[in-house]
Length: 243
Image (cartoon, one colour):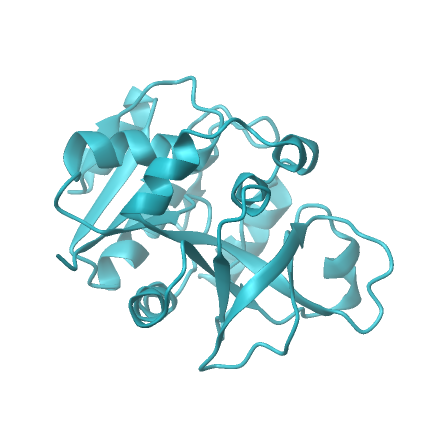
């Protein structure tokens, strides 16, 4: 069995930007832009997983598939697992958790991650891009990933750490982390049964639960930098970019 699925976890209750998934970008809700990019990657199944009826109704209005999940999940990956168990178990072996706030992610970045996962043995795969300027290093809204070698187009390297702010970064291999994860079905099932970890809570980064439990997370290079929207200012910036 070699089937893949994309599950997009999203909710209206984000503290920094309430109702973010339904914010309009050039007249279209953000979650629909993300859904469209996922469908354009030609992965077999694409599902939006949300605890909010408004998002379910919006996705269905645009012809997509959405399911209503519990509202008490601690992380997006926990929500992804609920959708996987209900709709996909025994039918897919690779599950892509695509965050719902990256409307300009390139479809070929998604398909590249799937190809990298198929060609390498690891529990979880993700993507990163080059840091554009020094301001990104100190911006806590931008998650960074540390690897031990230079990321190149054709390699898939073990992640050493993920962080928002860290001191003493001289000569380190630091990249802009992109909010997409590919789990094997075995890894996802194992991941959600673990307690939230110390650094997951401290850094507010769900991938730290995997890191602290010795999962192998590999990182591939994306040639574009999709903007994760965390603030109204981000929304204005990406609306201009996508016009």
